[in-house]
Image (cartoon, rainbow, N blue to C red):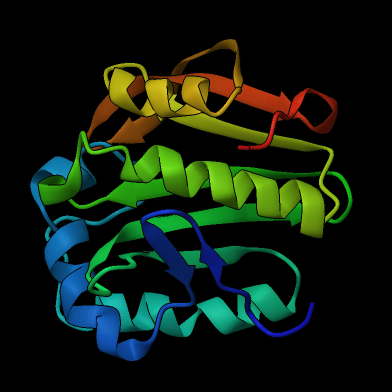
Length: 183
């Protein structure tokens, strides 16, 4: 792959993370309410973890395995969250993953970022399928998937272990031929 891309939407700039984003990532992703909605975000979010995570992004992109964007507000550059295409199988499929900081929930930022990221994957990476999962007890994440045109494909019962608790996951998918880009 070439240089790590940036994407623009009406309200957002999706750009590569920089090490200077570390403190904001630690604060936003480290909030219990955010970590509790994900499978992989640690809690507590210790010093240095954000910078280590950010430093891993270039190698993942160069290897063609993933692309991770900092979700920022165009008007002031404030970091709102993160969105990624992960486990990329070239010209086939990738998993969409995201988190948005608690102060920015219920404002449509995640849907806007997800739509742009999926469009990038389909149009620029040549993906034929994008899929995503969310915890059954986090229906807000499922609504994002539905709003961008993903179809519910099933439930993975007791599939994920988080903090000594088995959780069901909801699986969503989108095929390239069913994609309807934003006007």
